[in-house]
Length: 116
Length: 113
Image (cartoon, rainbow over all chains, first blue to last red; front, side):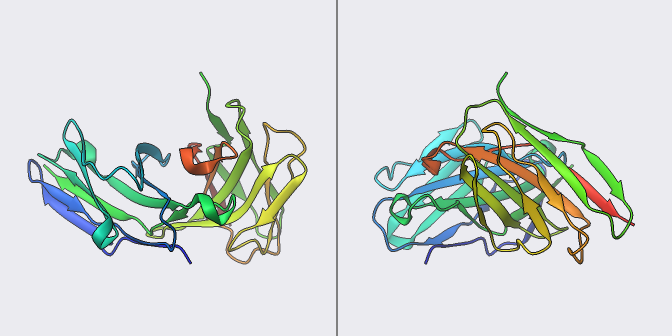
């Protein structure tokens, strides 16, 4: 069975601190996709990144970076020099092409509060 | 611009009344989904539909019903059988190959008094 675990329920940091959000996943397949979404206070989930299991290169986009490690089944998300606008709930999700067209499996989310 | 529209943004209903939440997409996506989110909770799947006139129950389908008569539309009815209907409801859509991820609507906050 597929599973996504975001062990950090809530994190608070002071502005300009770096913060890492953890995501650990379980799947029996070798081909799969991982996602991160951001849910700001407005409520809509915004897509941040999609990564397939064959691409283990780390990704950097501005202050955001993602560390994908198949050896530990983790896909962690780091925000560098955090800002108040980064305050949101962040969800990690998993998609397995070999499980039929079943819906994405989401973690329970991590609420990040960045304090000015 | 393509996207998903959920309406209304806020909805108030009296206990015992059925209420229908609207979800419309113009992305030409095949699949559509309904999620429920309670304060401090993650996303719980209510129903999903991969093609017109077909839908499947998610993890918490009891007390809800859906229809998919058109590709663009996937309305959710919260019935009086739903014991705790007050929540934030999110609609999403995707290609049949959901490995490209979902596009989400902005949500409807339902309050039952």
